[in-house]
Length: 407
Ligand SMILES: [Zn+2]
Image (cartoon, rainbow, N blue to C red; front, side, top):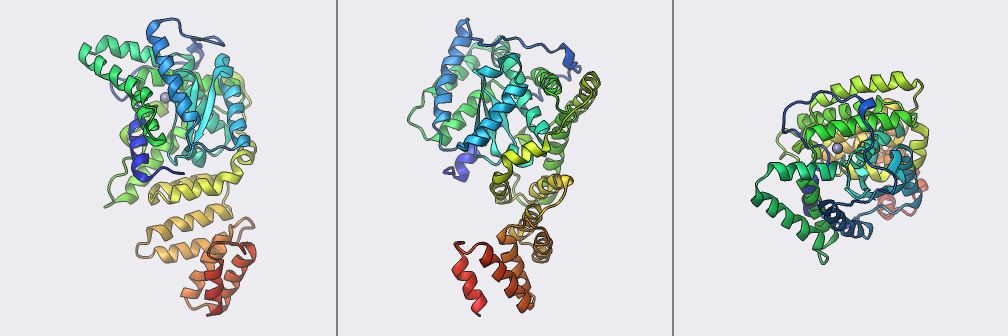
């Protein structure tokens, strides 16, 4: 991770409208999933000048992304994501590529040429494969329904010549900036995508198309409204605990809150496609097998964002499938990192709970040990620190912990 906070801010600011924009305009009627047909066939290539130009620019952007050091380059995980794209990508599945970016935010987006960027923060939050597939299918829906070019043409019809000219310059400049750093490149690509932000109607299309795709692939379609529900609840949880802190401006959902009506439509549509297909899978075991070894990193990234409300919400939401040592540890970490009055005790309680599980990370034992020492329980504290050293003898702080033990 080479990106500093400032660049990340630029990136996310830029991407702010990539997917969930579209609060403008009047409410649309719900689009029945059955009415959504893909508008492109396998191997689709643009034939008209404006779309060809858009593709040329995005092909250069993709080259930048493919070489970016922001990507998580784990072959097995990339292959897994590619497999999901194949499963829920519809007729153009083979034309889509997916990149996994190391950015701890709840986001994913699709480029007009068929490449998709999934943020690691998405993987942090998904409880199962059905949820992840739902987001991927929604993004695939943008591609299959040709939303970028349709949105662009619509915008051009509505805007005056000056603003279109200015935006055209912005797009060209962003794609041509070869000498800029990765983060800046990504931020500029975000600018491109935000210029092409989908209308509310196109978002509703992508939702309906996505629902249809995951249902046809055998997933439980209720996963999609559940993801929206999660996102709404996370934003609320974050705001509740933020209090005096500055508003977090990095989140896609802060700039474009998810309208409740969208979730309501998704729930109705999910019932429709569910009735049509019958049995439905969550794919939770497959999902955990694929992301399992990254979960520590994902949760670590999240708690370090210093957004305790969102972090606790995420941990508790994952724990709906059962608590374990890792989740209890990160629950405790949220309190420790917040460090307000009473948080030490809350953290200590969490570490004590974490070590009750076989999968508790070594750090749970270390922090549990220190918490015990602080309250004067020396023997138990030393035993816990000893356990930490036994589990992680080569930890970077091992010498320091040994020193504490010798005191
Ligand atoms: Zn979208």
